[in-house]
Amino acid sequence: MTTYTFDQLLKSVTVGEGEGAAVRDPATDEILGHAPQSTEDDLNAAVEAARAAQKTWATLSHDERSEYLNKAADAIEANTDALAELLSREQGKPITNGPNALFEVGACSAWMRSSASFPIEPEVVLDDESGYAELHYVPIGVVGAIGPWNWPMMISIWQIAPALRMGNTVVLKPSEYTPLSVLALGRVMNDVLPEGVLQVLAGGGDLGKAMTAHDGIDKITFTGSTETGKAIMRSAASDMKRLTLELGGNDAGIVLDDVDPKEIAEGLFWGAFINTGQTCAALKRLYVPESIYDDVCDALAEVAGAMPMGRGIEEQNVLGPLQNRAQYDVVARLVEAARSSGARILIGGNPDDRAPGNFYPVTLVADIDNDNPLVAEEQFGPVLPIVKYTDLDQAIEWANGLDVGLGSSVWSSSRERALKVAHRLEAGTTWINQHGTLDPRVPFGGIKESGEGLEFGVEGLKQMALPKIISG
Ligand code: NAD
Image (tube, rainbow, N blue to C red; front, top):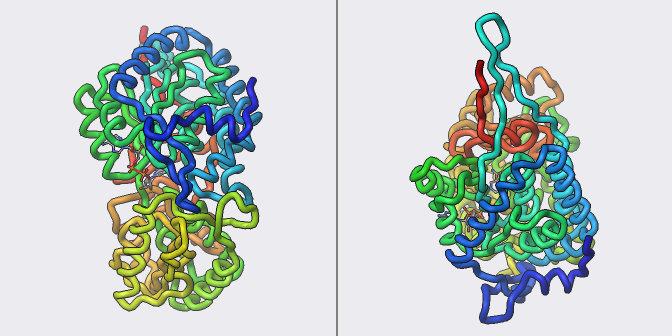
């Protein structure tokens, strides 16, 4: 197994200036390297190689494929430092201090090992005097995976690991904003995987679109925006490709009136600001009862004011820049919409536009109406609107009032009260006294326009297979 230095790894996934697309460090705006740009011919060649490799890969037993997954996890672990540095420089996230770059690389090997470990046996669904039937899970073929830029490595592994485990081969296209991290991850894994089983192609939306229309690809697993998810669903209809869609969210958190604001402030903060708010299932709108509204706002502002933001590779930082200028502009527009409506900015809200990089300060917005764009739209950045409520039923109605339903949370000192509210919230996951915590054993997915299908656990493996009944 090869161990790379940062420079070796970067060199191995970049091309010369003029041959590829410039990738910028979001903290400095400097060019980190140039990513190769795959063409449709490259895609055709990759799909052909993936189809050829899949024939042999599918003949391996689950144990044999799991062994490869574990070897790939070993390779990731052996290259943790170089991978984390590249991720930090390209995505912007702090290298250490909490759920950041080292955590993300660690999650990659953990999810690989976990996907390798689940038993998936044929299920006997009928066995009596009237007959016998078994449900098996067989490979789909070639899986096309398309990913976003917020957790580029970890989300790629969420797609790759179950697909490979179930006997498929994978052609993966990372986001054009973070291709190098994922190319590097693929490079490291391909030192131990059989040829053709995993191929990473860098390119933009057009390459993604070509994948969704490609007749050699049998399933698309996609993580990204709801808008792109809808386009993929339409495109995949031409030959009924199987789909897993993990899309955008606008997660609500409802605080009940029995909490100690100081006790929950840190949990609320990290629920909202993990990865500088660039997380699908982050807390994106918070509903707080009038009786403790000021205390919750004060406690959150105190926690938020103590969090250092800066270059990811400087170890003291716990928050980084937004990954790209387009997302910075979304955040700035939404904060301005809140400010001009008369909402109260508790902290932040004044970026230094002359500083290099895409830094937007941690921002808390109070006294904001539920229909303000900052509440109704996904901000995907370091801003949290805090909406006051007097009637819990009204807060639940507001929480359920959007077209998306990825995560949600309830905060209470009474589990019984929290559960009652949790059952009424329309979301794929409802957390109690936490927000956004994921576990490879626990299925995760959205409802409404937040997605289709589940990832993780045995349910996630089943999504990467075709159900097949043997009857009689
Ligand atoms: P995006 O939809 O802009 O891009 C995602 C990927 O789709 C990129 O690789 C892009 O090149 C590709 N793409 C663009 N147009 C395409 C097309 N027509 N056909 C096929 N592929 C195409 O999303 P983003 O801005 O990278 O990611 C942010 C969004 O992703 C947020 O809304 C966030 O909530 C969501 N997200 C969801 C999850 C989840 O698990 N539910 C996880 C992370 C991010």
